[in-house]
Image 1 (cartoon, rainbow, N blue to C red):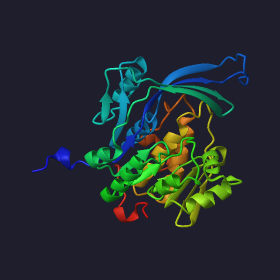
Image 2 (tube, rainbow, N blue to C red):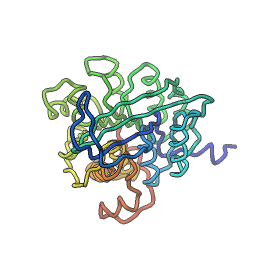
Image 3 (cartoon, rainbow, N blue to C red):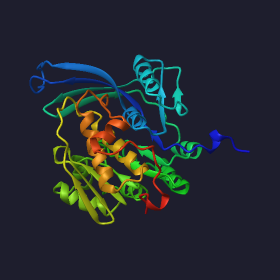
Image 4 (tube, rainbow, N blue to C red):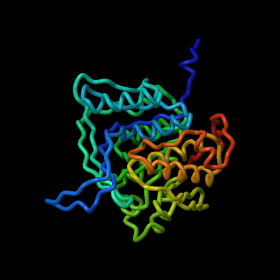
Length: 321
């Protein structure tokens, strides 16, 4: 007889490396080669795939995060933060050597520049993770298009798992057949405007939206001060930006994605999911990294909704091919 644990199907599986983000905000001037600028403040905060996992957990979702930790101080800091947020540790891997992942982010005038370092670690096989945890949703914070990932996305389809993939400044182009094959297996693709233009090689974001919307069932484009756009089945929805006092935009895209997935799991309409995403993304910009990610009751209050128990989107209404 199967145990209750064996029958459990988590809401979301997030797969990706942690990062420790050293964020300097409020720079007094643009950084120039050979120059020095001062910041109004700084913070060392957890980032990388921690951000969508944590943001979804704060929204009340059952989240499994697959990542790697080592013996270094950065691993220890993010692991402690993950435990503080109550994240499921079932897919954490602990190594007897350093697994350092660090980003220095320089935030000024609503923009950011970043320098990163990462110790190489062979990731756990995505297909095995999917079969082990059988999540309702798979969140991949970065566009990945190797053969192993492509095979895993087909496993996700077998399991009825909805695949949500971000772009995350990946050096890729639609001229690469592997990218097109991967996007054909993705249910929801969530690039920002600059990534969409770069990925398609289009002349502007509108052309990029048109081209990408023809490739994926649901396209969601984060447009910063211009809000966000979603397209499903040829029907387009636009939501304006939410005014906020921007401290740092690092992690805002991940929190945006969390709000969108939270809405899908609750069975909300696509425009309502998009609105929730914009609200979550805007809130995240008011603190360093993803530290200002919203909790479910705060999101409901901002949306004017009554607080509801987490729901599940009927399979017939989920994004699919």
